[in-house]
Image (cartoon, rainbow, N blue to C red; front, side, top):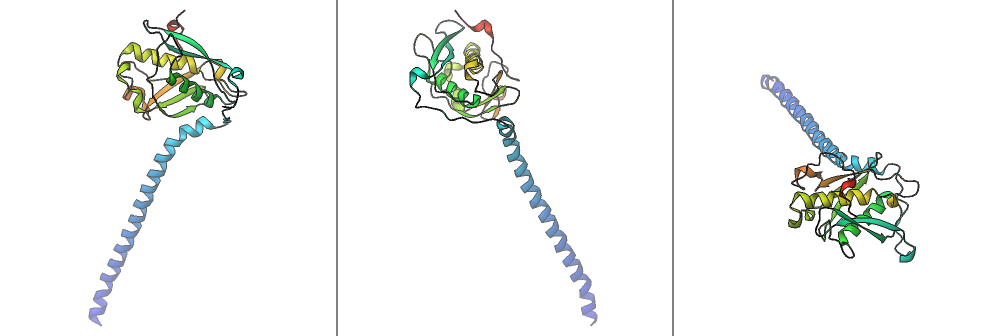
Length: 214
């Protein structure tokens, strides 16, 4: 009986220890799960904010070329530090964001004649978001960092090509907000942390009229 009485406090302490260990494990588990949820939510916040109240239209590829609206695209001058305009018929929708996707793809395809590409051929963008403020966020993939763009002038032409093209009024969808500025991301990070390497891009970019040629 004496041994049984002596064993009971140890059993109680052992049970209390295991109980506390179990509680701490659960707390730690919930903490890890919460952290992953918050990290995922942080990545989705921008997309949710951008898509709030936004109606996504469907691109009408079946619209005849002659009936498609002309959109002004801006490409690089082959010999001077300026942009050249090209009006091209594009299949647009009633959603500004989708129209911007179409316009960027047209910029990546390159000019018809007389100008030089402002974006490297084969460039991909990972995501695009249109914020309520009119700021368009474009997240480029790594292939935008092409050797041909490793100069301040080439980078500025690329940035201004996007800014001038994407803020053009023809891309504004019916009853949708227009694009007023463009912010560039590089693999999900601010552009100044990766590409471009010569121009500081801490904030959104607006079109600079001085870079448009005659």
